[in-house]
Length: 626
Ligand SMILES: *[C@@H]1O[C@H](CO)[C@@H](O)[C@H](O)[C@H]1NC(C)=O
Ligand SMILES: *[C@@H]1O[C@H](CO)[C@@H](O)[C@H](O)[C@H]1NC(C)=O
Ligand SMILES: *[C@@H]1O[C@H](CO)[C@@H](O)[C@H](O)[C@H]1NC(C)=O
Ligand SMILES: *[C@@H]1O[C@H](CO)[C@@H](O)[C@H](O)[C@H]1NC(C)=O
Ligand SMILES: *[C@@H]1O[C@H](CO)[C@@H](O)[C@H](O)[C@H]1NC(C)=O
Image (cartoon, rainbow, N blue to C red; front, side, top):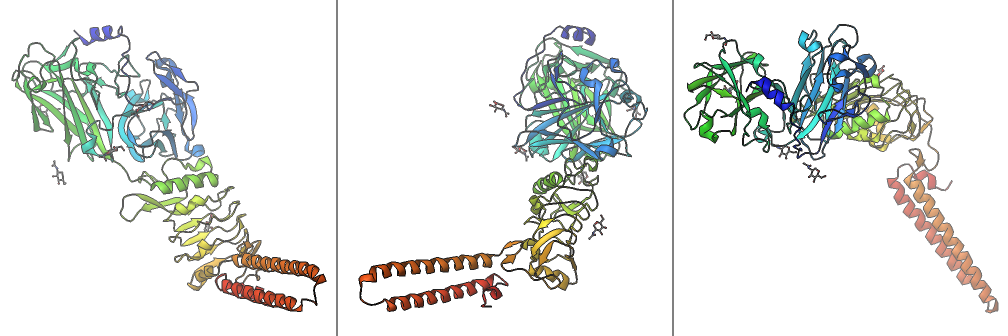
């Protein structure tokens, strides 16, 4: 049966209803305004989970048969910043996902200029688009790209980076949970991304969920192998069957039966040869799909061939011997140390003709470093609390990918063992910021320089401000209120403290002056009511750090106790007196005893207090009799 007739029949098959064993799947119609279900029964979500950008429609919508391909989202860097993302909630425990994008330009902006931009997934750059795009992808066709990645933090980040102020574009975004063990994850590990460089279904046209009435639990799109065959390959014959092929749709890869029901062979002792464009920098995972679907092969040894990768024989295949007839058989291989940008694959006959059902090629891209999770939390909290404007593009991971700048105004470095990225500097002086400083800033344990000067920040300095790493702190020229936290006083590396021109008040922690002593600089001038250190006024009684000091509280507490006891005594004496009206003589003894006791108590109170005040610095003078 020819492929044409086959696809004719397939059109009349009802959609297969294989349900996925995993629960998370998103099909986002980027730029789309309504959620709808297409005629393949896929529900497309109207655009959501994005961090910025604007929507548009392709210039020739009639050229696109699928509704979701007609709309797009673009990210003009001048208004939404250089980095924008889709951030989708995923399973909190981590998992493996297939990410699929559809991209088209189709002169949506009337500028006849295809944009240059990069796309990262989970902080690792996976796609680079460079202007000009080839005609076939820039025009009405558009193109699908996909990859497989681990998501460990409960949210999937897909970020877009503008190159040369071009606005990145996206037509659809799909994120589908797949089996964590798929594609040899146990050997490849969780710290790589598999970027699809070609997923060929031999002898077929393009097919797969979302674009045809075919199912694939893992939502893979399969393309024709024709254009990847080397010119040296002649005499190709397509064979296909309607018989069921066993061993398909099985955990963990769920390869669809359709893939194995069609195959190509080469007549006349020829070689089946493919040329794939690759990037020589990384290793490639090659996944070969075979099935013996010819009834002329009835036992092992009748069809045997060698697999050559870049001219090196890597395996000998006898499908029938391995699994028998009408059974799926797949085998994978990692091609390493590629020296050119072309990957050559040959199936060379040993006995009979070689046969191939499908071939997948994935670049094994090592995960880029990511920011320490706690510091991501801190930076997101600061983004909210400081009310960072959208144009600064504070989206996705603050530091990753390393090939791009960190968030605007942020400088990162690798941590000690080189396993992750940390924030070392925040420079947001004169940015018109109006918010406050989130206390999550205490999570930035590697922050050396914090400059938020000349903004309109309000609120107080968080208690956790200032990790041991802090060297320079410039918060001058804001509207910060409250006291200077004690935590700042204990920082050994601090060399510069500029808190001038704010509304701070209260006692300045004494040790903060060691900054000046150690050759650093400190400026606390032009505040509302800072006190207690040489250049500042004396602090009022009981006043420390903008509130009643501990010593002050104790003093007041003790004084209250004394007063209460005095009152009790007086009351007691009065009662006794009343009773003693009938008694003989006045209770002088009693009075003097009471007076003595009272004096004793007072003295004890003073003693306790003075002991306390050794610790609560600067309190002693307060209780000294004036
Ligand atoms: C999917 O959801 C069902 C019911 O909510 C649950 O029983 C099942 O474990 C989930 N599957 C996965 C892979 O999380
Ligand atoms: C990958 O991550 C999954 C889910 O978090 C985990 O079950 C699995 O053990 C990890 N595999 C490796 C090789 O680290
Ligand atoms: C085709 O075959 C010839 C001779 O075997 C060889 O020299 C040439 O490199 C091959 N071309 C390709 C594209 O593989
Ligand atoms: C690839 O190169 C590395 C170092 O350059 C070498 O150690 C390794 O053996 C090579 N692997 C193969 C398969 O040639
Ligand atoms: C903080 O940033 C401002 C510019 O916004 C700059 O003038 C100032 O010198 C910086 N402070 C420090 C300590 O570098």
